[in-house]
Amino acid sequence: MTREMLITDSTMRTARVEDGHLKLTLPNGEVVDFGVVVGETVTDAGIAAQIANPASQTATQLSATIAAQTERSTAQLDIDADVARVAAKFAPRGAGISLRRVGTTYSLRRAIGGGRYWRCDLPLISSAPGGFALHQIRDQMVELAAESVVFGDGSVASSGTWVTTTQAAAYGGQYTQASAAGAYKEHATPAGTTVVGMRTCDLSNAGLAVVTIDGDKTAATLLPTAQELVDMGLYPNTILVANGGTLEPTDRVYEGRQSNATVWDKVALFASDLTPGVHQVRVAVTGYFHTGDYPGLTGSTSSGARVYITGFVHGDDTMREGDAGVSLLPVANLMDTGSAWEYATNLKPEGAASSQFVGNIHGYEIEDSLAFFIDGAPVTPADATSTPADREAKIVRTSHLRHPETGSAVIADVVTTYTMDRRGLLVEAATSWRVNASVIAAYVMMPLNGATKVTGVPFTHGSLSGWAGGPIDLTALPDGYYGQSESSCAWVWDGTARGVYGAAIWVPDALRYTRGYATQEFLPNIQARPSSGPMTKVYIPRAYTTAPENVTPETVWEQAARYAVAYLPEGAHNSLSAF
Image (tube, rainbow, N blue to C red; front, side, top):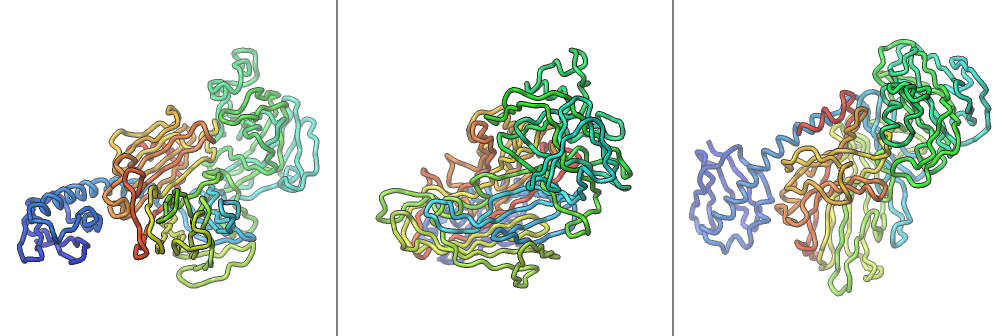
């Protein structure tokens, strides 16, 4: 049996596997046999990148070099097998891809199951260094396709004294609030409901509510228990019945003050796996509020026990974007800070005194044009409108880079393509360099800072395809970089009992992109940043200070990274910790 592996250099040699042996024909006609190759044939341009001046090397030198790289490529096959298993966990669990425009912000969406959608926003940003306007990925979130009813709807019953106030930014244009223990609002859902929640406000005098579903105070499984809030130090144990309080340890509760800002319209999910049917959802005032900061959020103390309600939410797995009466409601924030799921490049052009990060969030990138495609056909998105796709929705941005020391001179032309398809978000960047420069840092990244659990920590665990140390518990680590390994893929997840979301990044041609993992002192990793945000950040680098990359006006970088978000109702930790 003969299989071929192309080694991409100036002579386009062909290495072949014949009868289990890797053989290479040199320019002089000599055939070099490199011995037994374990596993399948590898197709990989990254091997050639690790061979310096192959035409001048002897057969012995080439034998040693290629044999070493082939061993690495065979190991990469084992890693890729793990990646495939992880990718299966991120496979779509629902139908639906769309492109939406709201003003100057464009959004790419993909269904991820359970009536949920992953949304990537590309707003027009002009606040980056240099002051140039550029559409770029910023906010990442999960939305739920559901129906909402205002608190005054006929399906909502009330007990106790509630005070209503007009507020244009709130759902329905007003909110109602009560602070006396025992006061409640109760919503009777339509038939077939499997998902329930409420719309509320997060204000500085908001307190704790206890949530009951069909008379069961333990059924709101997406909320923490009273005991959990005690264990995390947010409340004293005196809120529990055993210590004179009114709450059982297993009661499910909603904490009304979870930020250090004012939020007029917030969606809180209570349960998402109910038996289809009519459900009675009650939200009752407890009279308790926390006087210390919410974990990780300075200035988030509460000064009152008010429970704010603007409406109730109900849904089922059949609801979709575009259905009559259905809205997409944000239910989990993945990333909303000044970072991006894109590329970062730090370089020093020839003649410049210093290096500088340029492009995307780092500024000095000027947008030339945007183009939009649905299933390959060009479209012009209408404002406040979603355009559905059968296969893919795509945004193509053309731009050019500058450096603060080179004035208006263009140092590179860039074409960035964002494609949302059934496999996730593919970000491709073709960079045509116009100058000689030394790149001292370059990487793809996936930052995450959205609060998906009660403590405000965004993602609690992570792992990488080349990391043999098992799941990394990010909550137990100080600021730093963890899991450094020769990895083409990394995934992170909310590992709490209620965690149902995970996110992954994968570089398809990692050996080529990383130049054979040239940055040995800064290999792919997951950064924990508990002191700033908190934030979790994945890096897959191609250049670093100890392994810079020089570019010339003839250099073209072609880079690709794929991202995916998963909704895992069986539990994110159970699904993603085994790889």
